[in-house]
Length: 280
Image (cartoon, rainbow, N blue to C red; front, side, top):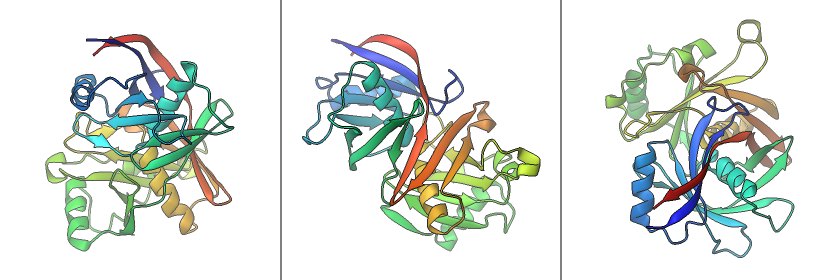
């Protein structure tokens, strides 16, 4: 058993305990797959990451991302949180941007305004949701007929299915029956009404992953990346906006979306809550 540097962070929040927690094991090249999976189950967080030396010479580091149930090729809050931990532990990028290597390939990350942002990955699947499955989702979400205004597969490596609702209150009122939704990763979102909700954010988002240790994810970068690509491709959002997530869980996550030329950047803050070592 060996000791490894370890950090536990809060991502998409500058305030500890108000974002999405992430466990990060640094210098984990000697940790085998089974041990990684076991540690991720033990943390019982939505994701746990392991930082390794890159294989691709263009990358600054490589990351492996585990939920309590499986390994993911990509995820958003682990990307920002792992980068924060790597930089904080003395990581030095080769260029102006940080290049992360993960299951989907290379992901670009930039630093600005005391936060990090990654480029939204391209879709693996972007298409309307088939009618029979959408009806299953509607029933599992406890929604009335017609409550789902639109739905799309917005899969960028995680398999997200996103549904658009009419207003923020409808999103916050969702009480899913997870037993009906097993095997799906579902995002729900709606615009804020400035007259009712204020102007701190422009959209409310929730993310549900039935069957995981935490069936609702507090703040989700990959889902927000997929929603941003959908909204911006159809002119349903401005080039720069803020998404609120975690409200229903007592969190205050903020995801900053910005389109610059052909890139869509998904940004947020991160703060270290635990810094030490773990024996694996």
